[in-house]
Image (cartoon, rainbow, N blue to C red; front, top):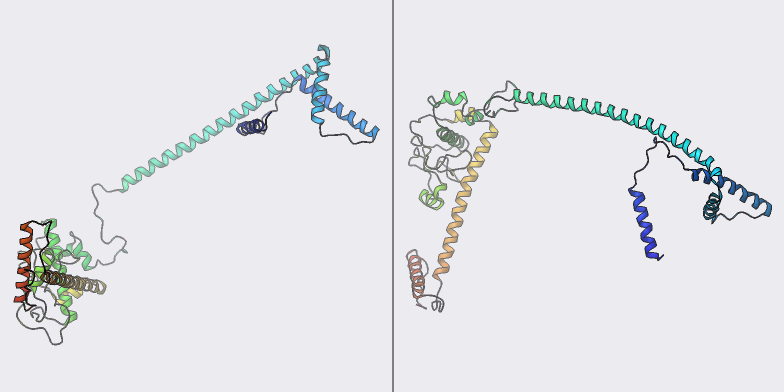
Length: 379
């Protein structure tokens, strides 16, 4: 046999042994055949003969080929046995077979009992699990209220704790809003949202009046015009407060425009587009608001948050407008400085004419604003 084929056969036999299931420990031993009993008996005799020969000669027996010698010797002796001599071993094999059958019957009965016990235990566990699942499902259905529940803004608050005023304004169905403004019970969600935004806007104006010492009736001077801001930011800016009048700012007033001047629509606490901060913003609404009401309805943390958020929105709006103006100015200067011949091939006469007209328009615009004189070369 070639070495490769021998190695393959060894791997195959090892794989077969690995696939074979192990015998249970409590399983009865298999019965022996007549030859097995004869082999057992002759093996003991051969070992005794080898020991006697080693003692007589004084040499230790060679055990390297012991298994091969036993197999060949016992097989030759078994062939030499007649039927009468083999009857003894056949009787031993029959008795061993009876023993094996009795033990196997007992073994199978034991296994059947254990299986029945395991089935009973499994059924009990399954029944308990189904009952527990049904009870939990019924409990979950009973605990849920019918209809769609509205989450409460006071969820997680200790019992008996007072509800903050800002939380009351955010809750549409709170009794405080109905008490502050009668007739809101039948209003739509859109009307209620606009009303809440207006309340927040007036709170911010009152808080700014309190901290900055500015009176809403005074108008600012020296700030960027509202037309420029409104035209640059588009729909992002609200309208000017109708309550502002003529006059200058208080002494020492510096910084961003005072409260009520403008606000960015869509920001938290801001009024939406199309609503002003005066009495004309919401038809029929004429509710007085003061710093005292703002202090009593907002916590210090809420006041600080609203003021910071409103100030950040205003600063960001002005900053964005200035950046856009700088970019537009740079583009105009770059376009006005274009001189020399017009772009040659690849352009139609209409496109060349448009470029020439754009250059002339920008140069005239810069000349009218005191900019550099319009160039003449290249035209």
